Length: 374
Image (cartoon, rainbow, N blue to C red; front, side, top):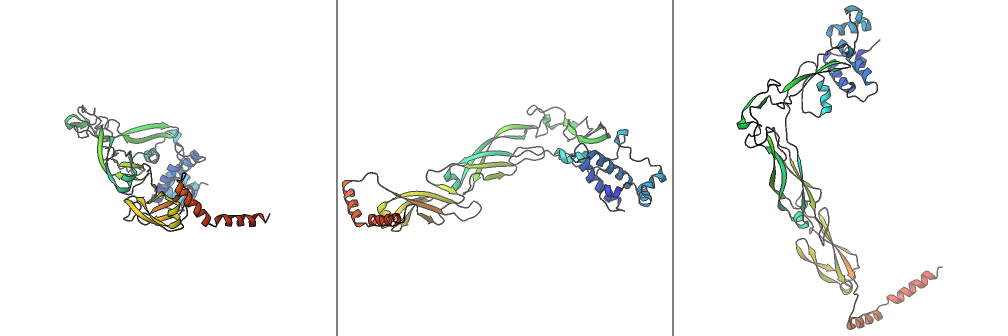
């Protein structure tokens, strides 16, 4: 015995509206032309058979009362399949619509159709913009140029010379045309956007000589873009409505940012890093040294005894956070430089220093302890 309610995933006695809703969902899922489910064709036939019975109030009542025996009360011949040229009372384009990517709403599958003209919006545009390190850090204004699809000015996007249009003969002004397709499952009827008027319902009396009736042309466009301070590589700026134009609206312009490297500074988000050399005496005795920052030069106090590789932090000397008012920090790494050439006087001074140092004795004592363990 067939359990039509179970086939549709419903509880026994479900309403006709619930039946229609369940059928619409399952028809999309199991239709052989789009489904990847196992035994999709068989399941689709079972779903259609269940719907044929449960969507009819009289058949539904008899089925609820007598089960499969309901067929004996109304001369029902059972499910004959679509191979007999059976025509359903709904439009299958709604099933395929979710897979086609078209912006069309045909409304209810079961005869009540809402027609909505397909809207034509322009596509988004992407433009790459390269900035110097300084421009990205402090912000700037740049001019960009790109090819943009825009409405034809002479015909104002209508595609018609002087804007004169007439009713489309192909669709009689409806903007949509009916089509029939014969398949192993029967004859399907669907609606599609009229290719002649592209859903507008009107065509040009005479094509515009500027755009050849397209209503759109491509032209070189220049725009000034304000770049905020703190922007970084891979960030983007979105200019709403500045992309390609369509008959019903324009897409957006996305400006993708690339930042050149700097000779001195390296960047990590809003923080910047730099290395500076200091002398042996500056590291040993301590000193105040001049260091570079994004805003100019600054004084850095190096304590006596500073070792090479020591990192100092300059608070709020980094780059402004692009989405906040705060700034990052600057980190200075000091590198002690050993002179490759020394003067006679320097050599004498270093020799005296060597005598004062006890490092060589300490090193001998260290080696003696270590070697004594082996």
